[in-house]
Length: 468
Image (cartoon, rainbow, N blue to C red):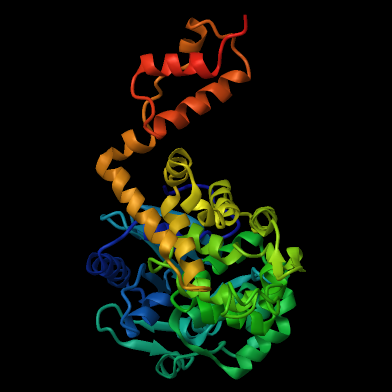
């Protein structure tokens, strides 16, 4: 680990990765205290800082513990056997504890001018006060003595925690000019913590909202993902809209506002009202990231397909929305896995209307989708956000329970009675017709009409006679 190449940009472990690697909070804190203690034994200052301090004061178990110190990066590497120099030029070293927990250990620093809206042109190592003043919001500028639990506050963060306020440190426009992602982070923290945004900070977010376009798409996507999975996601979306950030980053979603819907199906109001209600009704908490994106984008095909005939109609909006969702998620540099799964949710969200009329084979194919739980969760939220009827949702849950009792694999994915080789042996010439024959055969098998290989051969011979 030591001696590895040093990247120019400081990578951080994402919240999503932390969620995939659950940690015992008590063990995590003790391991972090041991790292801090080693620094202190060597004659250095070592404080917990940032989010872990904020979360502890709010009664939330921290997912990680960052450590700030006056030890220089090389000194940190010398003191610990397992380190990764992820951002030594910025004073950041990852220290891996004996338990395998990675901790970000950063040297107190002050930043020179930011010229690219992301990175300082230079840094110099400083003291705790200078380090606190360079941070984004007061609630993230707190330090904690790991031994005594004393909170060191140079920025008024503790008072803002008590007031439940998101406030930029110093002049908001300067802080946002240093890193324009902070415009989005202000809204995300308000949604995540159910805090208000300080009026001066909010005014700066609104004024500078267009500048968020310069932020890397991957960073924007990560922040939006955290926002739409937070308990306060509905309020977060309202704040995005009110500040203008939604129109800049997700104009396809912003376009839902004011688009009328047929009141007989959507008594709740326009497409934007419906969108907020869908997000409100997502379960479980927090919702899966794919589900959150699928829900956010599920109706973006409505504005471009809006027309009035005998009633308001959105013909083909699911297909149009799926194509638009694909564009949005490509623009945000989502992974192929996330993009394809979310687009599928958008494309198929209206299929539940056909469920009561589906043949047994079609129903089984629909319900055996490996993402069916996500589809059901979106359908439930979609129904609760409009007419409120969950009949089809309950029917699908009941059918899945029935199939699982019968043996899910046998009921939904039975072993094929015939293969292409069997058809060749029976005298059929390979070609496009094989797909038609084997598809029809699978349907008959799923509907319980065929049980054995012999029955399948006879059935195929009767319905698909070989050419003379």
